[in-house]
Length: 231
Image 1 (cartoon, rainbow, N blue to C red):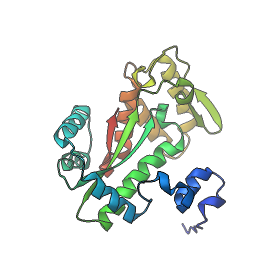
Image 2 (spheres, rainbow, N blue to C red):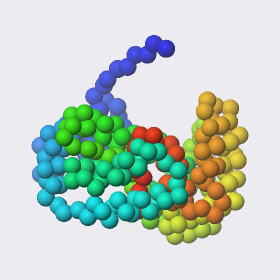
Image 3 (cartoon, rainbow, N blue to C red):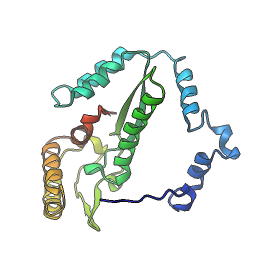
Image 4 (cartoon, one colour):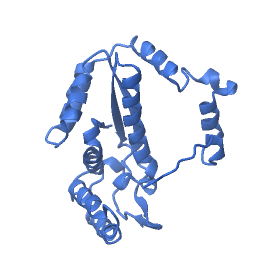
């Protein structure tokens, strides 16, 4: 397949706020509020600054191993976790709430950007190791924001009576009904059946949304050495 791509300035996209655009363009008005610019030089400065903080890497690795205990993951993820014991290893971290089935597409974009940035920095700064890490914001209690997805132009909503932190809520029969509804639409699409299999393996009745999100993200991105952390 022959494809053509066109690069346009962020300001022409019409989808970013003025603050984000000013940050990308390094506007003088926001520089007093920034520690380092979004550039390789800025990251090098951030690394030097981070070296001044004492971090208990042993505890970090122990906790990550606990979360992955009993979970099937890749050797690359295991290697990434072990590498965090080294003072020359730094994390490229992103985070998001545990939207059901990952929710909006920018959830996936955040993950992919972390992975690609870690790879790019390893090539540019080979004296360091970089591990992409994703924090799941399980304490978020805004169910109205996290209980729905848009699929083929249709809004599908998880109607549960559970309250409190969404990450502690459990997969119930209402969520299973939603998966059944998704299966009818996704199964006719490319890779749709594969996605449904992964969702059913992750979102099992009685599991917490936090656990289900962790399993789903791990299955999708473990081959890239991507560490997922429930917070």
